[in-house]
Length: 239
Image (cartoon, rainbow, N blue to C red; front, side, top):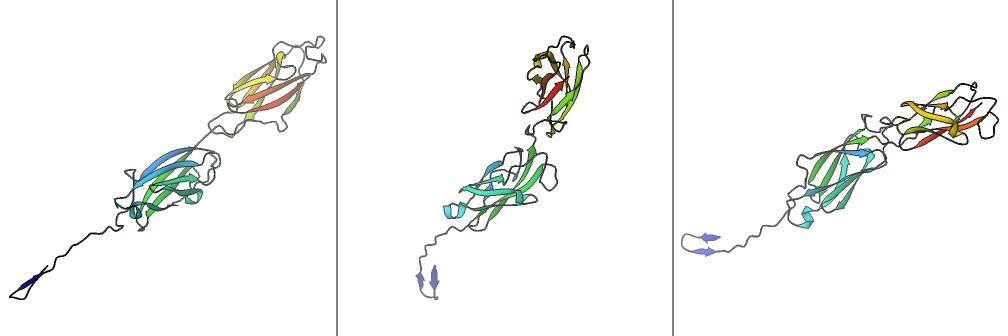
């Protein structure tokens, strides 16, 4: 820097150092700041998401906080995993059959917000869809899971029995209809439809020649419905 009085000059040498400031916001690595993700019911983990910050020193480019916002934010817990990563998870596992999201349609909307020490922030918009799992047991419609039925000798038909399954993508009989217990060998179980099992004598019984285990014309058999994951048992006493 040179000063001159019209006759003489003097020079001041300046050394100017540019110092870093926290003027750059963190940026989510996802290009459009929007992510769609599917989560199975019963699970809590959603995902871990990384940011970058153009500031060159750790004091400026590290994440300070990870927070959330949006319609369904109260159902989630965001956490800072490390200097560059935010993780978000459901605070409690969701049930597909009983959605808690604002639209009650199993599509949850939440924003994940990464903020640095200079209060510079970036927002990632998450759309999270809960998917159905086979997590509910089939249930026989009969309240006490026990039925007494009479069959005329010479006839094979015993009955059709219905079950329900709360899972929307799985029917009660998705796995099988089978039989068990003492006199199971005398019967044949079969699947009628998604909610119905049928049981019949394999051969028509003869009252005068009982084939049940204790030969008293009272047959004990269980009808077992399976949805591919779990079972329920109906106890039949057939006279």
